[in-house]
Image (cartoon, rainbow, N blue to C red; front, top):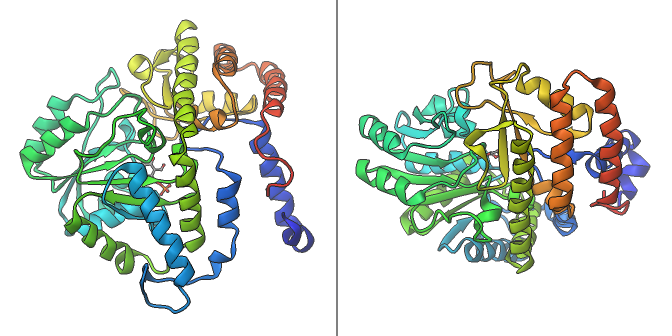
Length: 416
Ligand SMILES: Cc1ncc(COP(=O)(O)O)c(C=O)c1O
């Protein structure tokens, strides 16, 4: 499949091969990552990458769009069916672009966003000061309590003080279910639009394994990678026609130029996978795998934020340990286990060091691993962290990790 690159650009070919090898052998446990379907990669590597198609199906600025019109229309229909809503814009190049387009469509500069604090599990695009969203709008934040859960009464009280134009619910690192009905009550009490960013849990939502933000939220954004296992990209969903029209105008021509038609085709191919009955089995397995990991770590007396999880991720807290999230991340990476350092409630360390790590199950579940493997992985994680400076232990475990990885190869040599 890599015929041309292999023959023409060995430097890049070699690095892609090494990355393929890394993905096949290491244990990928970054909660936002996944292994997409070969069919999705085929669509992304297709001739569709050549086509300019500014506009929307049947309303393009370029000729020759008859086939890409068909593709985008199918992607829209599948997205609507999947999430159970009336309108979908499948053009955002990423989750950040999707969020930016919603704000651009519904807010004026200096309007107020109330979102989850980045250091409490929110995303940069929920108004963080370093993000364009925090520079363009006035941003205010709610967070989690020391028990790792949102206190909805506190959010309601704060919303009454701030009177946000938009209330954002959604997260990159929260371990429990969100109560969308409560968020709706809060938004209504202050006349705010309610936006849910379900980038992390969308794959569970569409399998009914996590609460659905519809009918409570006015607008919903998601990425199509992460738990959905599609291509990298974003989608915006709503049931409100007026909002849908504003969003279409803001995505194009407001924020983006030509849509990435190869990625839109790949989104459609991914949605087809998400609509299959087997998807539910995958989503259920994602949850039971992470629950098994949580159970093993708690048994080994490690602290988990909120004590466990209702979704696809856990947050280990090292506030009571004498090492940081960064040290834990490095020690696990040395053993071939890829996670990411993460702040935890009450953290006293900087975001570059942190007192926690975030671990997710979607990618290894896609490789076919089940509770038995997650139990084994949990035991190895506990062993490494209980003797964090022991580098020879880390390299011993790395060999075992690679042996396990080799039994769960997801991409064979024909993949590129
Ligand atoms: C909740 C949430 N929203 C949005 C994004 C942004 O997605 P992207 O990386 O595609 O811009 C992320 C990415 O991690 C996320 O976790």
